[in-house]
Length: 240
Ligand code: CA
Image (tube, rainbow, N blue to C red; front, side, top):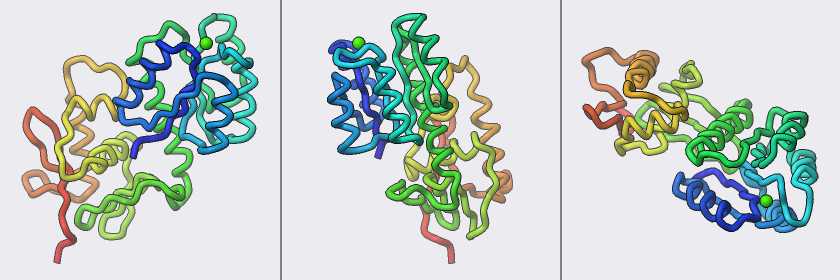
């Protein structure tokens, strides 16, 4: 299940294009076209991230943002701002959980920002020993357990110390366990910046994960490389 995003945007064209793009990326999008509608939506369900226009028809977006931040301190907010002055105000806001993007924006850049914020959000909320209630169930591949909600990897019951990027990569493979995830998808989802030509960093990280899982080069791996295409985390029943 994709992360839930509340989109607050009164401009029909921008809102429709954002909703389409976020939906195509796999997010579960609710679209509010006014501050009042956003408040209604928030009363029904708290999303993982709010992407909001600062210029709303019925209220000042900054007021809405301030209320969201005080009611839901954990919630990440990304502001869309049209003016340089607005940007200054947003930058002046307290909080590590408020980000901003200036209009006009490039869609790819905005999506990358949403993705990065959600990843940080998950890292913050996964800081405890257990995943958030209702979080994704752990993915089991033989003796390997990838608990995305809790950001933990267990091998035969013992925690494996992965670096953040290694964890993100393994978690991305685990999300589609049993299926091939292409190199391009992995680069896009795990590195989320534009990359040029070489995806060698992917193989370097993959090899590091394999080492930490106790796998030797040349021996069967839990992660199968499909040459020139991508990688697949194998689903298998526990051995023995
Ligand atoms: Ca507007």
